[in-house]
Image 1 (tube, rainbow, N blue to C red):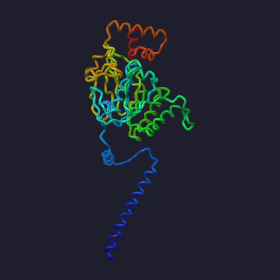
Image 2 (image 1 turned 120 degrees about the horizontal axis):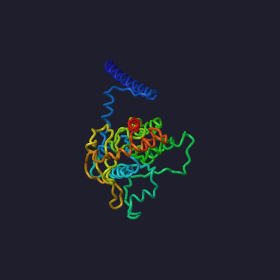
Image 3 (image 1 turned 30 degrees about the vertical axis):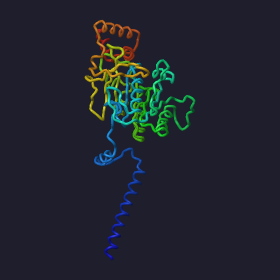
Image 4 (image 1 turned 45 degrees about the horizontal axis):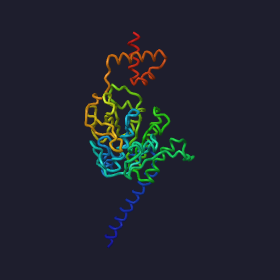
Length: 350
């Protein structure tokens, strides 16, 4: 009997030790104020095993659980493609020519670009025969009559924190933000981009949502391939996003666009310079969208400068320089690099 009691006591001691150990570990986590989470590599992998493998939301361009940036020049079609992606995800139905692997998901499309009437026009036949969106797609506009609570330091802070309310109240799994320039006062200031992207990454981690952010490019050299450097505030935005893709406008065919991967972490680069997805913007029936045409090389759609084009550009550079404009402003107006302006002035002044 004494031996059995001893064994039971040892078991109880072991259980109590485990309870104490667990309580201490819990207290350690609750009281941890360090900005680092330290675990062994194997512990991280064991935790990751419990999470599902990310699925395609818009082919290799956008995966579940990512913070992704879509960028392009003004009036190239960012919003058109973004709404099309939102519609696809809300239905769990692929856009023709592209893949999707998820079931229907609730999407919140934050539209800071179009009025409701402009939106209606795009998805109707001249304001009649309207397109029937899935109930999973929510469109969100700014409430201009809302008063900002005093706890927020500025409107941008208030706006950023309002995203979580939509997630919690409406169960959105995907956020599409159209576009980033509305969320901060100056898209070129790196510290603003850093604050915004950190906040979006925090929402992404906390709620497990996928986020697609639309952004503009400054005027760029249409003779050169699109790179990460074409994105406004590129360094900070690129560093803190998981993936990025861009829309280019064909110089030879005005209605043609091409889509190119710029950054990716969950896949190899499939849609690169030699394999861009080529699309045509059209409005069959009552839905303005990108219609897949096939694949091609980016070089086929870039502008080709002739000798007369280069001569005209040189003259414009010298004229603006004589007006006293700085090289950076000349470059911005002509869509070329500051180095091109500098070298042209040096060459012609020699």
